[in-house]
Picture 1 (cartoon, one colour):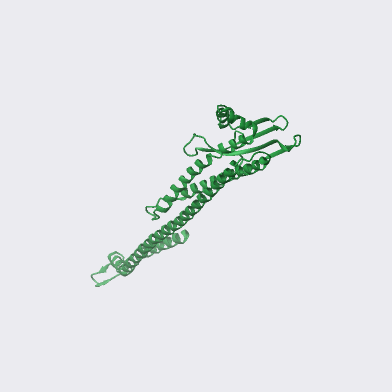
Picture 2 (cartoon, rainbow, N blue to C red; picture 1 turned 30 degrees about the vertical axis):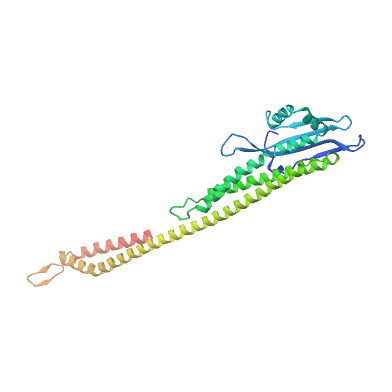
Length: 315
């Protein structure tokens, strides 16, 4: 009982009871159930609440009207001990009511523990409202937006927490309904009807808070989609700008290539005539071919062939 209830078992009361026919009228012999509740643990600011449960066993001797109570508590010094200590300080008239009708004690248990649900839902509601205010005031501009997946993750966690709270309220409702049915042989106590209304109010509050969470998640999801779209548009604009610069660079290279094609033949001719392979003969008054001209042709063709072969090998 010291651990939190298993998630799959939250909401179940494990209620069981039996009647005895020894007296003139049928009366309760025993009943047992598991009461789940929320309690402030005062351990951390991130998660100051814990889900706990207490096992209750009540045996009543219909002949001697002797009552035996067994409580399985989550800790040694818990609320049950404090509640029993406070009960011992009550007047004899009050204690006599508990002895005459043990359902007063069931009423005390079901009044004490589920009462924490109001404070728990208020704390969750405050967190949801903070997240909701942030969702409605977020700037989705890509350059200044702080919107991210963390806000949605936090809201999803709160929604899961409220699912557990709803299961616990249903657990308490089931116990109240069962106890009210068993109380049919005793004086009617209007507490169970009042407690049922209170628990239904908690369930309605959970529905409202979960609706706020759904709206905030939807708004944040649309905001993330819009932020991603704006980011993609800005990226496309940047890529378009880079593409334009690339086109401009290509045009520049093309112009340089055309200019080079114009001046390269002239440069080649000037270089060729400046070499000693085509000297000018002043006696014959004309350009003659030097005897070593073949060396120029061989070197030129060899270098050209080596360059072409290297380029083809790299491809």
